[in-house]
Length: 336
Image 1 (tube, helix red, strand yellow):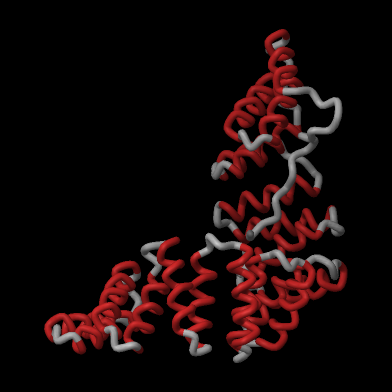
Image 2 (cartoon, rainbow, N blue to C red):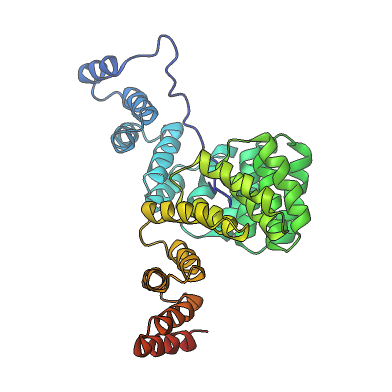
């Protein structure tokens, strides 16, 4: 529901403004002066702006070997390492090159979260927000970290303040909606998500989350519109198609539901939820062999899907496969 968990921290500099040196310029300068730490750092920034992170890491590392006092280079190296999925190295770099600014603590919080050290991450993010209270991204990361720690009361208070202070930041409204939804406050969640999608109508994850809330409150027609928008915005997301297909089935629209769920299976052949829903639709049409096939695929993808085993047992019974029906029912009864 949430979509991305942490705000992306942009690199210092790394622009393509007029007058910025080209890659050829930087390579020629380095060939002429290979021990110039600043040139290595500048080249790393250029490479990072092109998404060439491993090459950027090499250049930032070379710069720091030549001049360990380049704090901004150490920051950029840590960020590149985090983006490459190398959080332990990112943390080691940050701890080797400590700084006292908000960006440093915000990045350290993101790294600690990536290492599943949410308690330490919250401490670092609190320091970042103290140093830069006007930064909405850090406040957002702190709120979500607090939720990971089950500190929902503190997170809720933080989100309330953030929504008042940054009323045009959709992510705060969406996060507040998520908290309300998880706490069973569906009307409150609906209002928060409605504000979020008005602010960011092209955010597929927010549209899907709004659909979930509408579905929970019985507003199935509104849920249909929200899920349709989510699928339109992110057609490659199988989960959105499953939600949409399930909603269409509830609206007694089986044919478009089958189309939507079949597309989800095309995107993710082992999607247990999609196969389960397709199995139910086939069973409702007395297409028992087809239903059994879908239920088989559902439990193969998720052996803990209790209702999948139950429906599979029924489908086997209807197709005269009594031994298989008995075996599937035994699996059903074993599950909690």
